[in-house]
Structure formats: structure tokens, C-alpha cells
Image (cartoon, rainbow, N blue to C red; front, side, top):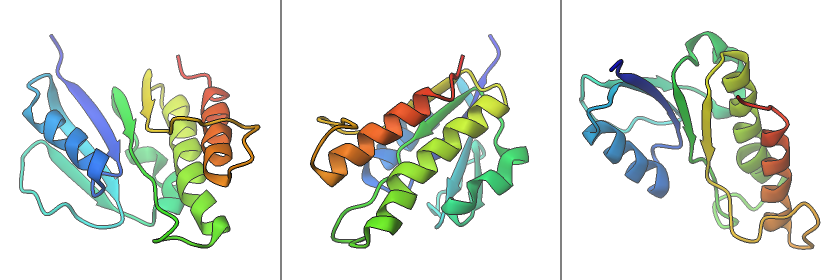
Length: 142
């Protein structure tokens, strides 16, 4: 069986850190490509780390190649009180990643969202996550 390559966004966060640990432990993966604003500081032959401005992800389309994408990016109101910046992170990064997955024929895209996500929600966070989910689906990843 051919070993897989996983792309992980958000490895420095809580959920992404757990996903990274599982991917490193799983023998089905030969490479894990991280896109992040800061290093995880892990020395592992499976890891390929790209430190980038995450809102510039589309510039790295040529490096965005693999079998699966795990998108675990997100922020909090406390860390990012500006709603426009918040949207750039919680909406923009996942939507751009889904478009890159489609462009590069990556068949699996997994994104962390939120309970209560709905485009019709009166709550900013839930509405934003609902909009993100809808636009990720529009990428029509096979």
C-alpha cells in the first residue's frame, strides 16, 4: 500500500496539535506537510514545515500537494477582536485551502468548524463558520 502525504494547517493550535501527534504516529503516512505562521519545533523525518503568512496561502499552491488536508485553523475573540481579521483567519484560510485542494486534485479535505454553524445565525461566530462550510463545499472536492 502506498503511504500517504497529509497537509496540516493549524498544527500550533490545540486541535491541530492533536491531529499532528496522530499523523506522526500513524504508519500510513510518510510525509506531513505543515503550513503555519510559527514552527512546531519538532524534529521528525516525516515533517516538512513551511512558515508562511497564512492569509497568503494561495501563493504556495505549488507546495500544496498531498493526499489529504486537515484544516484546524481558528482564533478566538480574545486573541482577535477585530471581526475583519477574525474572518480572514476562520473563513479565509479554510476556503483558500479547499480551493487549493481542488486545484491540486487532493481528494480529502477535513475542516474543523463549530456546533451551531449556520449561514443564517444571528451570532457572528456561528454565521462565519456556516459561511465557511458553505464555501468550502462549493469547492466540490471529489
